[in-house]
Length: 196
Image (cartoon, rainbow, N blue to C red):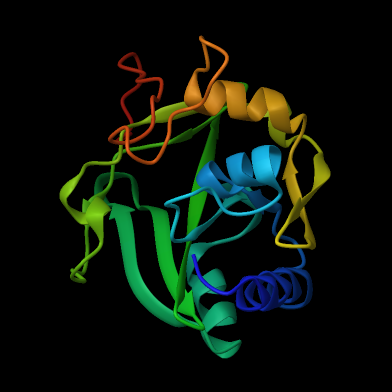
């Protein structure tokens, strides 16, 4: 992912942006960053970006983009679900390190990330060619956050973090998927119309 000092500086800046410019936002580490914090207190081997989640009812993508751009971050991409008027992923970069902010949407007692469409194209990002596989996480994981450490910086994480990681990757065999396994094993929910 890069120099640990740069990653720590970026994490500190992201925390400051959320806490000062977006104080109502409920956010935490997400995806590979959460798994890296749980397993290594740092980046997973082969993971080249940071991942964060925001509860959609607490912050809009427009506000987040404005706050992060004001903090010196560069907007790389924005993915949306046009039929539902939802922003799903905003991709930013600072110090040459990309980071993704994913919006989680509440339905009943579960949060989900739905399908999205490409809005702008940037080269050399592997996920541009892959669809976002819908996945669902129990809402109680985001009722409160626990402290986790990543690159020496304390960041909010879903609570309990181990249960989040088990749910996110559907761990069945005592291990988690590696970066060379072609992606994450995610729960696909076909009983929801994610474009509603």
